[in-house]
Image (cartoon, rainbow, N blue to C red; front, side, top):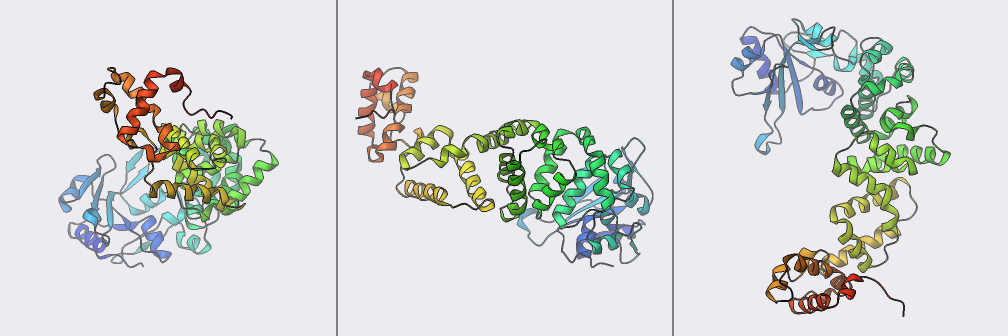
Length: 425
């Protein structure tokens, strides 16, 4: 038996008063058995959705088709509240679609892993038909059915098993490891979105390095990064091994950890990034990992740093800079360049030195009002020439000075065309 929060006990009593049994089940029970205090709780019951709505009229309907209500006590900043989902018993039919069922045993039997197939109600009993408690003690992620059959039927379970192992620091039975190797090719049947999401969750889990080693050992990496995982060079394998060894030291920032992963594949990194069809913003960051790391390494002074940030934007720069910091944690080899950019950025901020057009002391309307040009398009163009001036001499970021340069650029088209060029003397 586990100790239930009062909110869960009250919900179970409300179900019982209405003539329905109920059990806390799944990950929340597992976490309690491991000595943790979960925030998210699940109650399962035979009561259908309409009955649940009558018993819990203030609850939100999380899913009509899944017959799930949610009571969220964390709203309005309540840090001591819990999130409680109450759902009708369900199982998967022959076509893998969800069906409702009549017993807690059927519900538990439809779950993939033994450690999640445990239910408890102190007023009734603890249900553990697949010896999940024993597997928790052994620190094993074991499938309820034969793993070969489980992975053939639902290939996504291979990734979900590794995710659980990476979250809990558990291991996989030898039979599960062998079944993954045998069925690794079936991963292509899993939707790209699922593969992308689960890779991100595995790599940011508390024991993400373990997850990476498991993915590689089971032959699942080609299903996540494509041909880049095949015929890796010795250097690439070493980079991957060092990443798996040191990644848990990093903050669990998905794009940052993914950036380091794709860097392991070197020239094939861009190809690997395309494989999982990331959204535009994530793809841009990951491609920057491949193309911009060398560029920022050679930044020497504030002018070069401001020019670079002006070109790519602050968000992209921050990503690459933070990725470089993470890289130095995983692959210790000195931190001089990272620290130098940090100090340069601190000086820029302290001096409030302008970087972007919007940091200038004038705007396009000022250029028009001054009569330098009567074209809005030309005024915007002249304005965009000015950051090169204030990057070199931030003290010139004054209306009078900038208008003088705008007038000069407007008169001298050749000068404007060659802005930023450093002539040899």
